[in-house]
Image (spheres, rainbow, N blue to C red):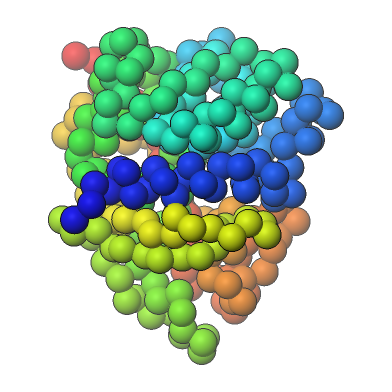
Length: 276
């Protein structure tokens, strides 16, 4: 099997320019308005709280819209991603916005070495990140190593129940078709599009992805030395996950149109690193 990192990196490298040009990311707003924040960070703010003065690292930062938004809230931010093309867009955005954000090219599992062993007050991970990682335990160990004692993990992610659904059904049933739990082998997808509006015709369309159950995530974090301090589930998600079955809300989130309370769409998890 091809190395999943090379396959996925090719896909994200190609997405970078298309995403930066898409109205859905609205990069122009960041340069036009120095107070503009991404929809994702605006959604996170009530639970995220005051981050002013914190030193933070954003894992799997992509083109940096959320990283820049956290910097605008007063955090000293480092963004980390394995896609060189994504980081080109992130650096360009930060430069145009006049914000000092450091960006580092690295695979998540190599993050500790990539930052030279530095530790942070905040590890932030945005939506749609964990599905690209094959081993949730190794991820949790990486997060723990990046946090100093008392430091905090903040993650909002698509719910593993949502990831496990059959996306291609044409009826109104919600059917679990794919793994809820982490499996050794990836789910291999071939998707010609992306989650934003674009006219770009993609050539690197194959991705390797994994789901991780909530129990697996909680257990991994606890075993790595973190204490879970908060967990909230939502009936919305920041993209149209089930096409044709969701309604866009006023805050830019998407929600199942028919009885959305049937489905946990996403969640926020917070944890702190325990004293050594």
